[in-house]
Length: 379
Image 1 (tube, rainbow, N blue to C red):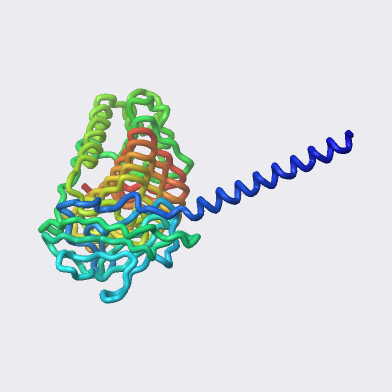
Image 2: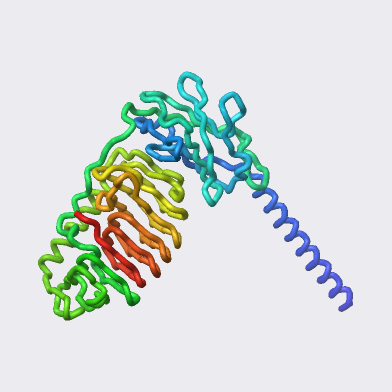
């Protein structure tokens, strides 16, 4: 009798395992068969006043390139673009029925497709329809259930110039923070350094490291030989830093939104206002090309991450003092990387080992250095 009970229990357990395995397999199969969806587009459907300038033949970005964000990772081979007259997976058509020639690229997650027109600009005051066909499929081969289309209308001005962000007294600092400056010896800073309202003891740079400048503190703590105590001046500078951040974040009518889904490595960016609702990644060299009076403003709702050994470079006479990076999230400049421009950070600005900066590090929390060279630009 005991042998029978044991056998019965064993069979029951084996059946339970089998049924559970089948259920799991069925669930995985059902998940694999769920059709992907387009969950976000840029421009959004029925958008107006979309900039006409998109991309030059030298990959110089001056406006908005349509993007589609998918609910699941897609197979890049199924999302392509070819010359007009052939079947397009991701197409852009004007109100006269003309196909726009372009190149489609996927981001590193294979969830965002970007259509970059091959002409230097779209037509002004023109309605466009972007479409993703059912050729688009996931890595598992599951295609869109039906085509997805959205419309937008361009404005008649291809480019809107921006005035520089007024830094006020914060513009006299190479490094300014609220909660201190940490340092892995030895860094070289050309310009003033300050922190407020935290005590001067939180400024860990030594006097020899501040090659041409003064270390300002709110009290008598901190490096003694080169430290200047001026709480009133620092309070004003911190206030101006916050005003500059708000000014940069509040600029309207961007010339480009969600460019590259935040991946800007490898691009050449002309002057203008650029806006992202999430993070920005600089995975390869970036060039900012323009004249000495041109202005770049980057509005970033997330983080800035620059990969190691990459460069932000200037061309055509562009000046670092006219480049403003406003970031609501943290900023990380990778090991031995080079960065250009004024960083207006809501939180931490971290400069990794051996990286260099031609610009200003203005953080509403802390700045961390690791054997870096930071040089403030000429005003």
